[in-house]
Every structure is written in structure tokens, then in C-alpha cells.
Length: 151
Image (tube, rainbow, N blue to C red; front, side):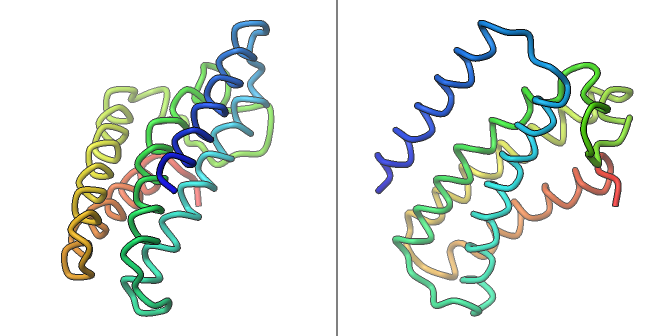
């Protein structure tokens, strides 16, 4: 299962890189790209949260699968924040992303460093082990959205 996720992401990344190499990325495409990645993040985080909240039964293998998927996509959306991609398609990105790039980078780094800790906890295989790390990941999402996404 883990190999399939990795292989799928490799194919997606290779396609994205090949496309970017042959054409300059338009702002509307960058916006759609990052929104798609954010939807994938939300999908996986939602399943993990539902298990922790008891809305779905906790399944250690399913939890690990979605934690790994979240960790893999955690590094992907950022290349979609190109200059000029605050316009070109409907989006909720605040100008602060580009005005305070250092703070945006800190938020990105926090998210990217929280997801491997979640995967490590998921490998333990118990619900108690994943609660804190999942909460940490959710806090990084909320913090970034509070500062850099319009409501």
C-alpha cells in the first residue's frame, strides 16, 4: 500500500516537472495545482481526524497509509505559490504570502516537520500514540490558514 502511494506520487511529480520544464507556468495553473494538493492534504487529514475523534473506527494500517500520504503531499503545494499567483483564478491566498515570505516559509517548515512525526507515531500502531502528533499537524494547518488564507 505504501509503495503504491509513493509510486503514484512519483508519477504525479514527474508529470508536473516535465510539464513545467516545457512551458512557463501560468498563475491560474499554479493556483489550481496548489488547490488540488491542499484538497489531497485535507482529504487525508480528515480521515485521520475522524479516526482520532471516534467518527470512524481506528485502523492502524489505514491510519499509517493516510499519514504517509499526508507527509508526502506536505512538500508539494509550495511550488504553486509563484509570483503573480495571487490572481488569475479564484483563490484565498492572502498577499502576506509574498509580502512576508520568511513567515510563510516558517509555516511551511512547521507543517513539513510535523508530518514525519505523525508517520513515526502511526508506525507505533496505537491510537494514543497518534493523538498528539495529529494535533500538532492540525495546529500547523490552522496557523498557516489563519495568517495566509482569507476566510
